[in-house]
Amino acid sequence: MKSGLRPFVAHTIVNFGVRPNMIDKKFVVIGGGTGSFSVLSGLKKYTSQITAIVTMADSGGSAKMERDEFGLLPSSDIRKSLIALADVSSADSLLLRKLFEYRYSHGTGLGGVTFGNLFLVALTKLMGSQEQAIEKAGELLRINGRVLPVSLDRIHLVATYQDGSEVVGEHDIDNPRHSGKVPITKLTTRPIAKVSQKAKEAIREADVIIVGPGGFYTTTLATLVVDGVTEAIVVSKAKKIFIMNLMTEWGQTYGFTAQKHLLELNKYLPLKNLGFVLINNAPIPSGVLARYKMFHAMPITNDLITSAGYTIVALDLLSRQPVLNQKGDTLKRSLIRHSPSKLARACLKVLNLI
Image 1 (tube, rainbow, N blue to C red):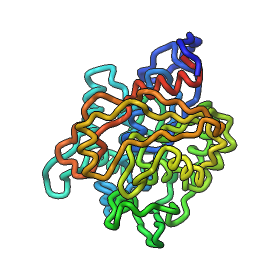
Image 2 (cartoon, helix red, strand yellow):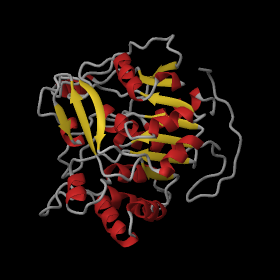
Image 3 (cartoon, helix red, strand yellow):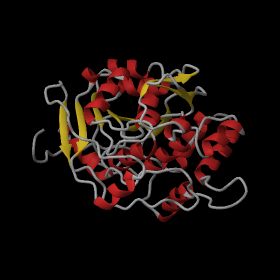
Image 4 (cartoon, one colour):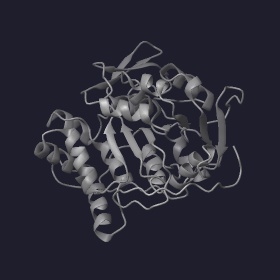
């Protein structure tokens, strides 16, 4: 990786809330949740050509209501990516973003549900399809880029474990009722999901593809197991970056080192397609470590092999901002996160774009 900054070429891009002199490259960010939120929040300051391709396997929290009561695809990961890319250049746009983030803390059937999810449900009924609703929500939020569901098929994740047991549903995989030490040996969807045409085209046309971070099986691999996603990544001429998680996950990656993560990733996306692997090397605060210990989680050890064919970039990617749970949020959330600005600059620097 070259040191120092390189000036980038000025380009004039017409888009909502977009400044001139932004990088003229097509970025695709694959995943969902708070991981993609961090990547997208940082990248949008440098380019308007961002496509977030988001997992649609969520089954916890309000996703269950959206699936069971409205017959819709889950929208929480879509909402987070929309918020990440939303314009905040005026008081009105900032207020709209805050509305999409607002979570009800009381009320029969509403506790824990976000306004943004309810808005997307209502908009789907008005527009006639979730695809159109997502696009319209992007226009209203004046997002710097676009957000696409990885698939329009209604699916559930299916995890098969080393002991032969099987768990159906993202929420139950993420919050195991069995021992979280038992490793997952196979991840699939039920029924088989097919990548959406728009998502496939975005991947194939990308200049840069960023995979992760996020729940390793329930977010990152949840997108890669959709039929056609890996194939599109392989044929794409884009530079490919994988961002390693900060911590292991009980029930998913208990005891995993960085190399073990990549060995598992290789089952779903051959490592020979990667150009760069980014991993945090900043120490996790002791107080945070003590809290994570209660959840059987540890920082991911960097034991990556330097001769593996991809470039390993270890640097400080840690956010110093405290993570505060929203009132009414009953789901387990991460205690630390990647820094959006550090992630964006790291990705752009390894590509010699800044």
